[in-house]
Length: 510
Image (cartoon, rainbow, N blue to C red):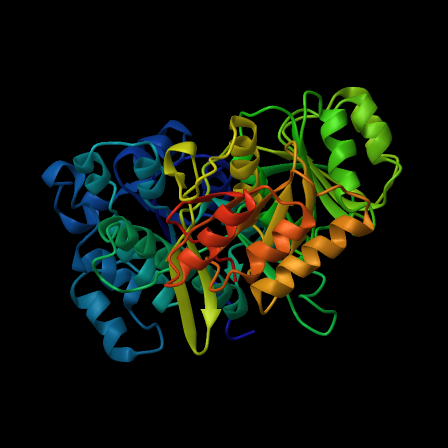
C-alpha cells in the first residue's frame, strides 16, 4: 500500500459550486486543510468550514480584476513538488511552501459563453488561465496529487475519500489525471476552434467528451463507439440500444427529413442510408401509406421518420411492419402506446437543434473534412434548357425529386410523381445502370411512370439516359448540367417533347 497517499490538504477553486458542499464537509470531517480563493472561499466559509485564503500563502491579493489569483510559486510549488525527492522537500521548507495533496478546480464556461452568442470580449474573459494551469500541474504530479477537474467527477471523488478516509491510491490518482487531461485538451480544442472559425489554419481539432461503446461496429467482429451528445438530439422513449448501423441510418434519415422541415406531412422510410419510400400528403397517415408503397419489401427492418406528429391511425399501420427505428417530433399518447407494443422497436423524439455544418470521415492515414451539402435546389435555381418548359406541377415534383436525390448514394437516379418516390437507383457504378435499376424497381411495384419526373445527382455524359427515361414514360428531368455533351441530351429532349431543367449544382453523395 506504499503508493497510497494520505491527503492532508486541498486547494479548491471552482467556477460552479454545484455538488461541492458534501466534499467540503467531508474534507473538514477528515481534518484536511482547505485552501481557496474568492467566491469559492466565501462559499466554504458560509458552510461553517475553516478555510485558508490563498493570499495568506502568497502574500499577494487577487489582482487584475481576478485574472491572477493562484499563479504563484508557493501555490504551484506546493502542487508540483516530488515528495520522494529530498531536494524538493527541502525547498518546501526553505521557502515556506505548503504541501497540496488535492486540487479541485473547474474551468470558466468557455463553450457555453460562445454558444450564448456573447460579445468577443466576454468570450475572451472566459479563457481560463489559472484553472487550466492548476489542472495541468496537479495531473502531471499524479504520483503525489489528486486532481479533480470536473463537476462530473465529484460523486466518485467523494466516495473514494469517504471509503479511504482521506487515503487515495495511485491507481485512482492516475485515473483522475487522465480525466483531467481529457478536460484540459477538450478546453484547448474549443478555444482553438473558436479562433480558427474561418479555418485559415489547416488543422483539425475534434474533441467529443461524451462517448459510448456500442454492441459492435458495422459487423459483429468489429468494435464500435459513438462519440457525441445523442441525448441533446433525441429523447429515446422505448426499445433496445441503438447499434452502429442504426446510428448511421438515423443520421441519414434526419438529414433527409431536414429538407422537408415545416412542409406538409412527409414520411420517409430508409434502408442502408437510402430512402426506399418517401411521400408528402395532406395527412401523416397517407404520407406513410404512400411512402411504404414505394418499396414495401425494402421497408422491412427499415428506419421510419416523419416531419410531423405521428397519430394513432398512423401508428396502427406502422405496427403492422417490422421496423428498427421510428423518429418523429412528437407522438400522440395512444400512438405511443401502440408503437411500444414491440419491445425492441426504438422510438425517438427528434429535438430541434442545430447540426454541425462540416463532415469528417477517416481517409487513408488521415481524415477528409468538408462543408456539408447545405444547398437545396429551389425554383430560382432552375434553368430551362429545352423548348418545352416544365409545368408548375412538374416543377414541384422536380424539386421534390432533387431533395431525395441529394440524399441518395451516387450514382443515383430518382423517379417521383405527385410528391411520391416511385423508385431510385442507388450507388451504381454507371448512371445508365442507376436508371435501369429505377425503371425495373418501379415496374416491380406496379408504378406507372408515364408523366413522372426524373432527378440525377450529376450530369448526363451521353443522351442514353434521357432516351431510356423517355421510353419509360418520364416527361421532365432535373440535372446539374456541365457535360461537354449537354447539347446531345437537350436535343433528344427537344425531339421527344421532354422538359429539362439544369441547376448548376451537383449533389454527389459517396
